[in-house]
Each structure stands twice: as structure tokens, then as C-alpha cells.
Image 1 (cartoon, one colour):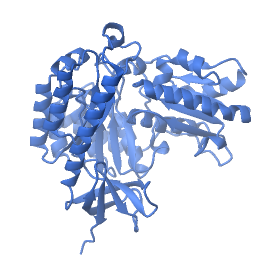
Image 2: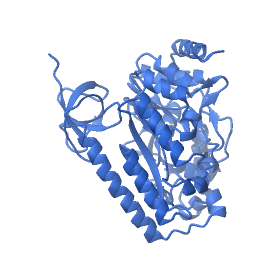
Image 3: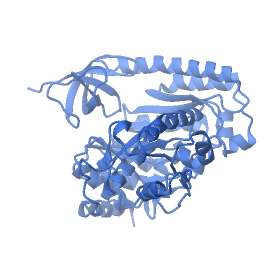
Image 4: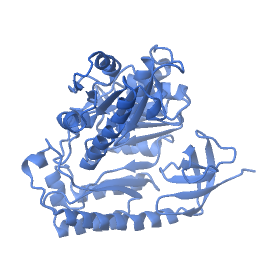
Length: 470
């Protein structure tokens, strides 16, 4: 079957399957409440939306504060040590609610629960439930089982399941109503030497295309305007004959969804067909988050990233040639095993050359179970890591400020996402290129599209004036 026929078939499936499977009625105001805090990446945010939907089907309503909740949930990340420390500290803080209100259940779920189940039980002794990222379906039953077990210690459910892709569920109910998440791929097969994800989320498996389209349709029916397709290496997606390019074309055919984003693609698997879909589908946003990690070939080889700096550079060139004006962000990991001053200088040089719109920048922290933790020395001194990271951040701030300043005077179509934290009279919107734009509230509401002229900028934010069309 040629790929065009695959897309046509998938679009028809998506249009036929417009409803989610029947779910329990929405809980009444007097039902038990769940309070969730989310740590980590967009995958974790998507999992929180999914979990909120599962719990709603079991009779729970969402609480805005822990004081009103019968179930307290920390959805966690294991990628960096600092996040784990924050979660453990927060679990001990939330335990105070258990002491004041007997019967409250405290749960730690997600990647950290899978990765450090023993440490969670040891350092946050009042946690009642520890559940991994393949256990969300069972959380309502696990909570009830824990309530019935008395003070028997934490209940554990952390077994990875290579078949679990949460088919038949949707995160539309738990999201913000504007930009929704659909996870199209779970797990990872890349096994970069520094990364814990394959050990916390398991091996790679794709969600069936019909299921992706069903979820996309569910979000459209719920009023969402934007859809973000998620995967640890999202462009590696494959299910039977369909690949990621097929999926982009098919999701673009879902009525009601006006913007499509995806994250995070892996440089090695960025095919010409995916670039063609990015360039040719008007709904697919002209923005790519493309993690480079390092500007040194030696470091990339020790990381087992599978590409060279030259190959990464060629990919950026192809993207910019096919999609003029595309915004590109990245991840940079400083201070990895064996990184020399020359390696660090090479990273700074690549940043100056490529001029990423923005970046997520971190210093390396060794993660248990990874290849690097077992076989490579964490030999860059802490103070050296901190200094190198400061230099990377300072350079990127200069580049981001210059890139944003070049947007002043341009007309952009933006999607309003939420109230601004700056002022009640302002809203936060985003451009097609994922630039944050602060706009006057006026008559606008989250979910509205509007045209603005960019009047000024900072390193992180644009400020726009709505255009009144004659």
C-alpha cells in the first residue's frame, strides 16, 4: 500500500470514530477530590491529563488545592536528580494533610516511581501508593486497596508493560481546553548512555493510528484548537505500514484541530517525508524542538546519540531550506563524562552558528541504571559543570534576545492559551513558531485566534498589539 492510500484510509477512520468509548458519568461536586502536581516533560503533563480522566471515570473531581483533596498525587520525572529531590521533599510536605485528615491517600506515580521505588518508600515514609507509568489504569483500584490495607506500608505497582499504550482512553477531560496532548509512542529504544527513559518507560511501542485519530477527534469535539503529538523520539513512530509522516497528514485531516505540534523528534529519524509534511501541511506548525545535546563529536559518540555534528548541521540546513522561517529549539547537556574545554568550546561555537530560537540547558547528573553510570566516569568537577552551564545559558540568552528582537514589526497569527501571569488585563498567546506573546485581554478568551503586530520583545517574550482588520 502506498503512503497516500494509508493517509486517506486513516483520515476516514478518524472521521468515522468521533466519540470516546462510554465513560462513567462526571462526578458530582460532592464526590472525592484529587489534587495532582506534575513534574517533568510534556509526556508527564499528558499522563496527568490521562490520569485525571481515568479518575473522573471512577468518580473523582479535580481539586485546585491539596487542602480539599482525598487523593494527593505527584506525577514525577526521573531524568534529573534535582527533580527527584524536589519530589521527595514535596511528598513529605503533603504528608501533613494525611496527619490532619485521616483517610487521605498520598501517591507518587510516573517515571520516578518506577526508577526509585525503594528510595521513595525509604525517604518519604508516609507515601501510600507508588505506581509506574504503565499502571495508571489501575490507580483508582490501587487507591481503594490501599485504603483497605490500613497502615501496611506503601502499595507498589511498577511493572512495565510492553503492550500498554492506554488505548480507548483520552486526556481531553484533564487538559486546559486549548492545547491538548496525544501520546503516539511510549518508551524508547535509543539507549543514549546518559538517559534513564528506556529503563523507566520501557521499550518503544507505537499507538495504533486509528487510536491516535480517535483521541484527536475527542479533543476536537471538546473544543481544543491545538494538538501536540508526543513521543520520546516522536518521529521514530511506526505502526504496521504507517510512519510518522503518514500520521501528520492524517491528523491534519481532523476537522476542528487548527494547529499540530510534535515533540521531541530524534535527529537520526528526521526523514525527507517528515520534512515534506512539515513544509506542506498548513496545520503543522513551523517549529521543531531538535535536541543536539553537545557540539562535540567525541561527546556525542560517548553519549551514543547516533549522529555527528556535521549530520546535525545538515539536518538544520534541510529544515531551513524546506521551511523558511522555521523556529528551532534544542536541548544542551553540559559537563558529560570526559567533556574537555575544547568540547565545551565546540558546543558554544555550534550555538553561535545555528542560533537556536531558545534552548533547554542542563548540567549532567549521573542516573542510576544507565550505561554512563555503570561504565563512564562522572569526571567533570561540579564547579566546572556550573561554570560551563552559566556560559551556555548566557550565550543562549543573547541569541534568543536577538532572534526575538528581529520579530518586532512583524504580523503574527497567535493562539490565546491562558491568562498572563503578569497582569489580569493581559493574556498569553503563542505564534506558529511557539513564541510566547503577551497581548491585551480586551474581548479575547483562551482558544481564540487573533492577528497581532509585535511591538517589543525580551529574551523570552514578545509583546503584541491586536490588528483590527478593516
